[in-house]
Image (cartoon, rainbow, N blue to C red):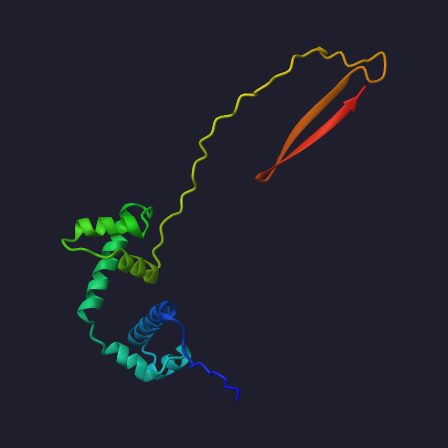
Length: 179
């Protein structure tokens, strides 16, 4: 007997749900502003945004839990630190600075999650290349002194190495001149 498995219709994983919740909150805020400023009916605004009217009213009457208020405070603090340091802190250094400012511990995973939800990213700096131009190991003596004319065949052999840079890659061309 062959059984098929039909997964439940799930909107996505937890991370997608948080992002989706943030997008919906932006829609709710825009509906609220349009209703207050332009006096558009909520029914039409919800229909245009693709949101159920009951969901909008549920969001409007929602009271924030202690955890949500705390997360809001942490996000505001993260944004202020992010602006102070011009965005060079990632979640690890951000956690260290938050723990210094607050009198209690904030977990690095929580800071990472809140930064991701609010769209705060650190600036990725390019690493500087620290290298010295190497000295040639072996330099041959200049025997020809630019006298390339040969009296017999195979008397003088000359090579030329040309390095061309194209983009980030280097191409070496070796040209053999036999005289």
